[in-house]
Length: 147
Image 1 (tube, helix red, strand yellow):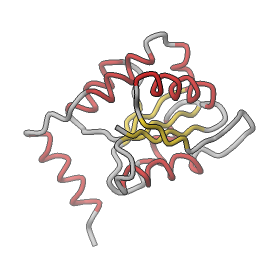
Image 2 (cartoon, rainbow, N blue to C red):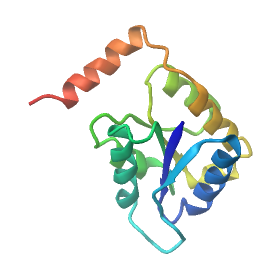
Image 3 (cartoon, rainbow, N blue to C red):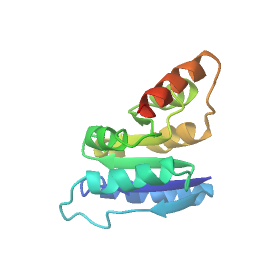
Image 4 (cartoon, helix red, strand yellow):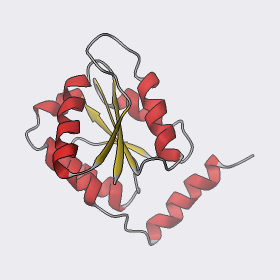
């Protein structure tokens, strides 16, 4: 599985931690920045990651900013992206099971969570349940593709 990652300046330290974790776990990584703690704008990193996911150039995306909210809002503007801000392992499990999320948004404050690797691992390893949930995802796709 290939994962695109991106962060703003506040999310940079956690992004580096997540990248190291993904490398240890054997995932392919496409790091789209930022590359430091100098102030940057989160849409400049959220949108490129989301575009890679939507184009199926990567399997999933992970975005990190101060709160995770800005990244999720920006990523969700890209058709085909279902970005979810997760703060717990249960959030990560449910957004994959029921929403088939393909972008994970994290808060830099999650870096204080010793279970953050578990959250990421559960999100990456949990399969979409389909069934009644597929009907709902298809409604989202239909709306996105309206003319």
